Length: 113
Length: 114
Image 1: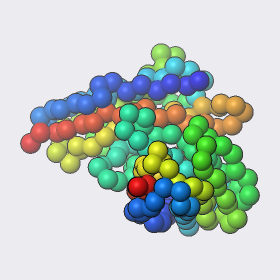
Image 2 (image 1 turned 120 degrees about the horizontal axis):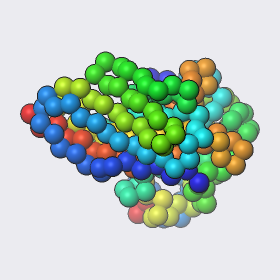
Image 3 (image 1 turned 135 degrees about the vertical axis):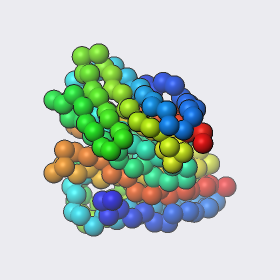
Image 4 (image 1 turned 60 degrees about the vertical axis):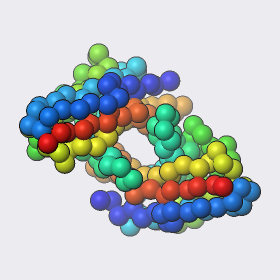
């Protein structure tokens, strides 16, 4: 357990509305990641962060933005949610003082109707 | 681009059996390889991490091996139990586009029958 909390854990939203998912960590890890997991596609990287205000795109970043104003929080925003963004979203941290072990949060289930 | 394959996609075994899960990757220039377990509706739990310089890691009934030259890793589970039923994923860390990248396999769904 790397002290990762995701919120909300479950959300149903309407197409076209903005949605923000929050990832909070308690151990001051530098690297944080947002993934989505879908049947048939597995886990795919959306965005990642390597420090406060330092972020970069992943494999499936279109339609998503991120922000990291504090070490402990990494926010994922869907500016205008679409049905194709219905998915399970996982936050992860990389512990670079423990061999770069990756730890995941419990996930956020998002349904866009 | 690194590709990670896990075969089989699903596996069913009777309780008590020893079993091996397979993970293969296309680019042998990796930093490390990590095995995870995922229960339905849950996040991923880290099981074992093998650094590129290591050949194997053990934790309890689990043993993971790494053969970089052949692009393969195996997760050995001894004396399987119904509580081992879950999806097991492997992830390979490598240098891509100048940064640390992770690629995941799609997992092997394990069912241990009492």
